[in-house]
Image 1 (tube, rainbow, N blue to C red):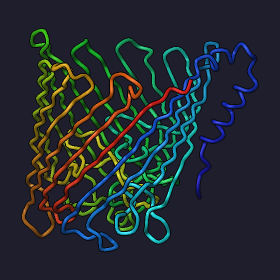
Image 2: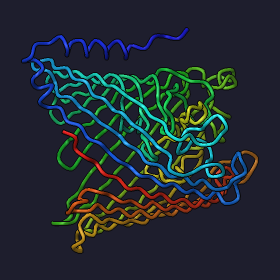
Image 3: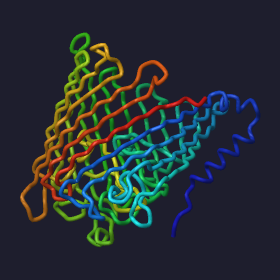
Image 4: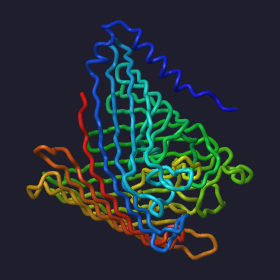
Length: 444
C-alpha cells in the first residue's frame, strides 16, 4: 500500500499559518523576500564513436535554453519563524531532433523515443526557523557527502523530503533528514529512489551527519545514510588547509566511505526481484564496498596544482543514489568523489585511480573573470566478469569566463571538453563537449 506523503499537508499548513498571521508577524516574511531568474543556454555534444544508440546513432547533439525562477521568502517575526520558497523551471529544446537524441540525458523522451520540445517543474519548500536551527520540507537540492544533487545538464535534479540543519553549537553543524522522491535532471515527473542497476524503487533515504570546524584550518566530518532495502553508508572526512607562506597554501582532503547491503539487497531473492546493483562484484548485484580518496592541492598566486589517488574495493561498485533504471528521465547522478567527472566516475569494483589537475586564475595576469584547468584521470584494475581487469583514462579541459563590467556584466560562458578511453565495453571511447552560457538576474 502506498503511504501518503506528509510533504503536501505540511506545505499547506505553513501557507495557512502565513496567511492567518497578523501583519506584524508577516513584516520580515515580506521584507526579506528575494528572487532570482537564472537563464542557462546549454549545448551538449557526446560522440560515442563506435557505440550506436537505440536508434542507431552514435552521437548525441542537443541544445536547449532553461529558465529557473528561485523565489525565497523571509521568516515571520517571533522566536519561531515560518517561510515558503518556490522553485520553478522551464527547459526548451532549441535543437536535437531525430538522430541526435540518445536516451533522456538532456531532455525527456517523447512517446516515439525522440526528445520533447519542452518540460517544466514547480517545487515548493516550507521552512521553519528557531534560533540557529532550520527545518525545510518539500523540494530540496542537498549538497552533502552522502548525497549530491546533480546539476550537470539543462535543469538540476531535485528531491522531495525533509531536512533539518542546526548550528546551535559553535563550530558544529548538525544535519539530518529523510527523502522519499526525486525528479531527474531530464524529467517533469518524480520517481522513487534506487541505485545504478536497481529496478525496484525505495521511498526512504534517511541520513544524519556532523561537520566540526576544529579551527580555521581543520574540518572533520561524519555522515551516515540508509537507502531502505539497498544500503547503509558511513562517511568520514578530513580537510586541512596549511598556510605555507603568505600567498601559498597546501590543502589535504581525505575521504572514506563504507557501504554495505541492507534489506532486500542483502538476499539473493531480493536482488533477483530487482533490488540490485550494476557492475561486477564478488557477489553479483550485492552492495559491499569500501572506497577511500586522498586529494592534495597546492595554491600559489593564480596557480593551483591537484594530485590525488582513489581506491574502490573489489566487493562491488561504489554506490550512492542513482535512478538510472527507474525511468522518468532520471538518468544521471552525482557522487562525492574527486573522480566524478564528465564522461566517467571511476567507481567500478576494484578500480584504482591516480589523477592530477592544473588550474590557473587569470586575475593574477590582469584578466579577472577568466579561469582555466586541465585534468587527467587514469583508472586501473577494473573488475570484469569473465575477462581480464580493464583500465580507462579521461582528459578534461575547463574554461570559464564571467564578464566583469558593462551592459553584460555577470554573463558567464563555460567550455567543458572531455575525452574518455575505456576498456569497459559499455563506455568505450567518448569525446564530449559542453558549451554553457548563464546569467542570473535579481528580480527583487
